[in-house]
Image (cartoon, rainbow, N blue to C red; front, side, top):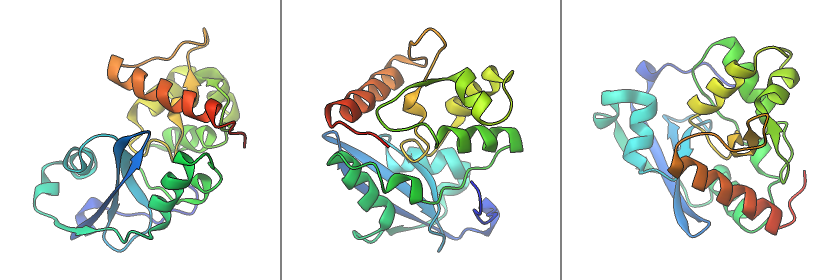
Length: 183
């Protein structure tokens, strides 16, 4: 993301993990070393999330707990309580091409409680003919909620993905709408 320091997984000796309740489920956040950038987040197990970023090396890294007052954890708690305003301020870091990073930045501009198509995201990113690239970027996103890929749909308005993923995305959309969230 803009301004995110370039981190190499090879420079990381420890990961910091924290979890909070979101929509009645455990939502975890992974940070690397002393960086405040979120490297992975989601409803999966912390070990699976760490593996998604660091591969098999994640088993060798020292694991530390995030402080309960961590800004990313606080932002998720606020979202669960109906306030999405803290999420955009959380720094994230994902490895990827410049095109993929542009799609993730564009996705962060989609307002809470609204939906946008992959084509809309591509246009926002300055690549109006790259809807498939936007879909690929959303599918590869490791920092869900902070990059709100749950708000991105097919041109038909339908959610795409695996059944479990669709259920989670729909639950997040329903939560935003039920809480009256708007940007």
